[in-house]
Amino acid sequence: MKILLTGKNGQVGYELERSLQHLGTIVSLDRAQMDLANRDEIRSVIRETRPDIIINPAAYTTVDKAESEPDLAMLINGVAPGIMAEEAEKIGAAMIHYSTDYVFDGTKDGAYTENDAPNPLNVYGKSKLAGEDAVRVAGSNHLIFRTSWVYGARGKNFLQTILRLAKEREEIRIVNDQCGAPTWSRSIAEATAYVVAQHLNRTTGKVDFRGAAGVYHLTAQGATTWFGFAKTIFQNSQAEQPRLLPITTEQYPVAAPRPKNSKLSCELFMRKFCHLPDWESALLLCQQ
Image (cartoon, helix red, strand yellow):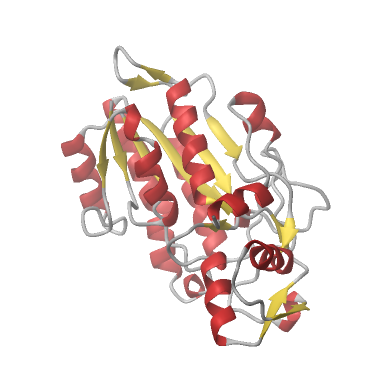
């Protein structure tokens, strides 16, 4: 099987390149090799590579900056995935695309299911929802995984930011009224590899999702706040802990509004594919 993987230097892309190695030949690309803002380049690379599956974790992820760059965010997150899905359909390839909890407005009391109506609050969420719709319209052999609060041992993420701030400040103010599931990038990659292996015909090298195609929520189990996330990071760490001060969303103004409830129900994913770890256990493993 030939796998075309985008965003190889990103948090999820980096882990996917390692988790997928035993399943086939990986053609892993960064922005210099396939610019998702360039429609023609996307088509050209896919037609030249002719993969059996396209896995697309690459995205415009700077949530606040997207408010001032809506066209670029939409091009990368909304348009590019649809082009990939169109090209995949033409060559008989499967596709996995990743989306976000930010497609919801956060007003629901409980965890969001795949049947709940999206209503994004910010440009980033709107662009990711557009990407979901484009993939869905373009092809039948696809999976879309919505995840949340992604972190890892490398790259720009909450875990790394908090550990850096601990060295610079005696006190850190952290929002304590937004709730979600911190999800390790490696957990996403390992679950993805398992799903691909489940649907791979090892004789033909083809992946067939058509009996399971659609949107699934893929996050760690359980939930916490950003404040709770930070507190647990320091409980796992040998680093000296600064004073953590819980604050409200209103006390931490940012350009892009965030949903206060980002909890996603993963029951459908776990019923269809595999179990997912709880967020505390995964975080502990990541910090070892």
